[in-house]
Length: 611
Image 1: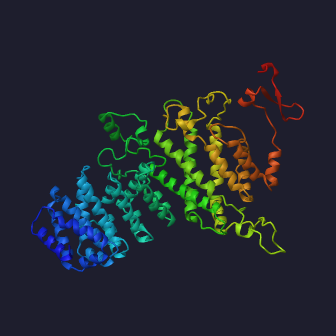
Image 2: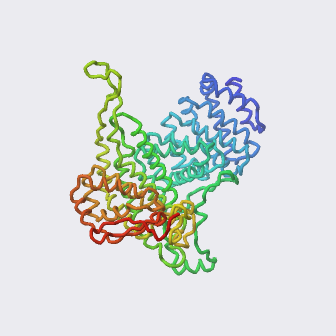
């Protein structure tokens, strides 16, 4: 099959031939492997004009089901001819082929209904668009603008990328994300287009929801590509704009795309539908319309934080954690920061807002009646504060005690080396300037004060859970020690609401303790906001916060080391009473205060007998 044969086939199709010519498939296959044939085909001007005319007829006449297979082969020919061929990409763009493909794909994406022939054609169409712009800045700009700003025609789906990202086909989703990644890669202009347009923001939401839906499905590579896409944008310092772009504001329309067809996500991989668990009273239509007219429903309460923002926090938490692990595993003196100072400052600001919202929620947990907060709101809020605390627990850590292995090995010099070749202590890695600046940005953002206030309220609102080793793990108010299993319980009871905040106190103590390490200004800030007492009170066992006591003891060590003022304040404290812990009761041991010394004393309760 030669280029002239292809031209003859295209001419036949232009003259009205409707059946699929088998030579189209042969041309597509040869173009896939023969680079010289791509040049030969690309040099024929008639090929591009005939292809454009054929696609234009489909656009004007509407998509005919009998043409689907034919269009699939035409798309494959365009896709393969444009692969690694910038000149052919330019020729296709000049002929208007990208716009024609976009319109046909738009029609097919809304009419396929799971039909495999349509799916195959959509795959080829998206891949053709991707190949037409790869490595070609002019084509990237034209196609990206056509997809997000001004479509080729008013009838073309303005949210085509979002629609494609929701199709129940891994290849289509993966090709769509790859197209988007190629466009935004190291391009501030195209990244801003993504973030500033309505179709761009809808695409961001759809990709985030798609990543959540496919994260547990190992066979779906689209999750990795979506993560790479967002990780690149975060690395280019667009996290704040991403976070704001997906926020839900009053009057916003739902821009999410519903998945086409049933069974997109397999039954064997059930996914939690948090939104489906929202607890609310369903009103009749008449009652709802009446309340709207009276103005009582004009301003519905906005959620604390939306699910898409939680997913973004998961991405940045993963990025920060991975960076910290790499820093620990490497013996290089300096490292680049995980995120920019601007992003650190914004995360600190978000934590301040989220912590204030969490305090408000904690203050209303014990109100009578049905729960004041929906399951979705509590789930998103608790996930957000946990992820933010996880980020900061690593952002404020740097392994300054790491041994440089290269300098630790003994030499063969008789005067300096060991005869047995044993390793010598190496030098300590210095703390880099970027980490010091990052630490100060966190502190100046009042993370310490916000975390202490949140801990103070959590200490008041969340009952400490203790249990004997042999008993069922429940507390006096019914909150199970293994509360993770009740995370999706309803909010009509106090224990149901408290279960969303399992581990909160532990995570706060860990962050504050890490920040206080070798940091006099953090130690002083903790004292200034009356945080010493609330931190000290965490030095006990709480089964709703595993390892809380251990983290609290380490935190107090960091807070008191080298700080005479903090040490003096702790020394002034006097014990008030001794409280028996269930573990002590099980061991038949009683705690009491010595009348003379005022110190706690443990004694065995002999009245309980012996085993």
